[in-house]
Image (cartoon, rainbow, N blue to C red; front, side):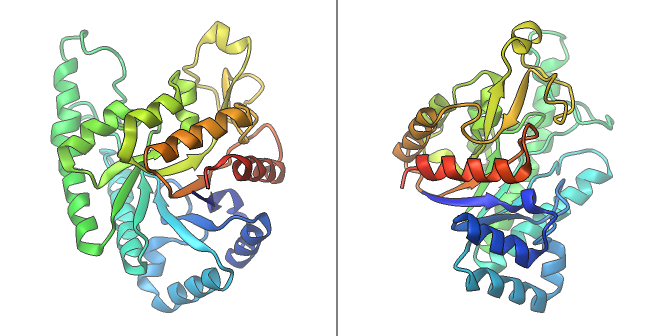
Length: 313
């Protein structure tokens, strides 16, 4: 495995300074965003597709520092029923086309989340039982069969056209694909080009064991994020893990995203990466640092140190 970093955490730095920071940290690759919810500060897909000279110059700067592009990322909701969905789908397609143009084989993204019925204008994450109310089975069928499957058949065809080998869908909440079971529901319908960006931090707060999830996923692991979560003692015992507070309200939340090692110790992380490697994944591990309990600098450095000590080389 090789270590990279999701560069949005350094979004305040200009492109060249960001690359120099990556070299100083000792990471081997960069995962940069092309659009979607991210402002894509370093590698906006639409801009680079329209300006070949700018793209060439950025690729030259990456290569000059001995860095590699681990993946392109476009975290987005292309199934949103409003204008955002249209914009996100275009930016996802731009990111896919850019990846194909520069030979990047993996695009990290999200499955999307549609409305629950025709005419609705708000995405609806249906995670309550299908047993009640009576309309639930039809809402579930509509979201998958009429909205998600057609989109992903189209995106698989696009990937084939431009030479992208893999989609890695992050198991993020409020998405149709948020755990191994939902990943396989989509993968079985549209093919093995769709796999998971295994991000253990989300599975942790959902109550799953990411090590068991890795075993269940097997060769459907297409990418991996290094990101930790801490369940906050006392608060989670009272209120449970369905947390609605802002991510910056760290003192009052029942769980928080934290620097790698601040939620699960290094022995846990060694086992996690060992099992991921056992399943046949020997690609990039990208640090995604979203710890609001400490400074960005401290969070990045401690996470890099922890990942260097635990990923399976």
